[in-house]
Picture 1 (tube, rainbow, N blue to C red):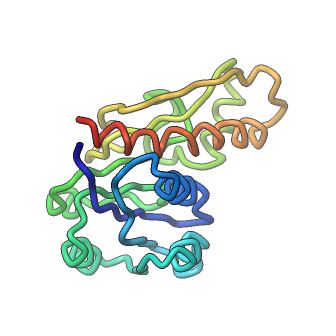
Picture 2: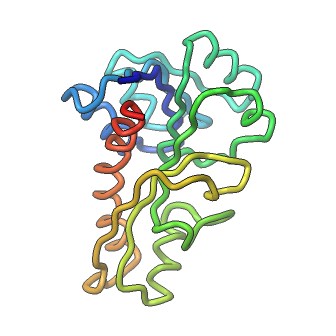
Length: 186
């Protein structure tokens, strides 16, 4: 079994990050989160990291971020609500795995502008009966990398995009840690 040194990238509250921390603490996988990075200094995900004794980095500079990944010997980056597109320079320079959690059943509702509530508004507007979440590898094509894990659920009884969002977030919290565990077994 392979284990990874993980950096989690967050831009907001970090509930998906918390699901990773909880799964790590419960022994659901052997990899360890050793760094939390954010592009926003007020992201609550940074507080979650500090409360867990995990070092943090706030930066928008690729060179600084890449240096931190090298300093911490990171071999997996997990984007957990990271609202910044990774640059081609970053993608070419970082040699480890990069995972992302996306709040739809890709390839539906992916790509530029499809994040957060915008995804659920589109799902609601189209009258979809099912939605879910996807963990995928990150490439230069936004939300276009290989799908590692998906889970769906009925949303027929949801009366708003916010209700869909809440239901899909529960799935995100389950499958993101599960994807890390699955990669350890490859």
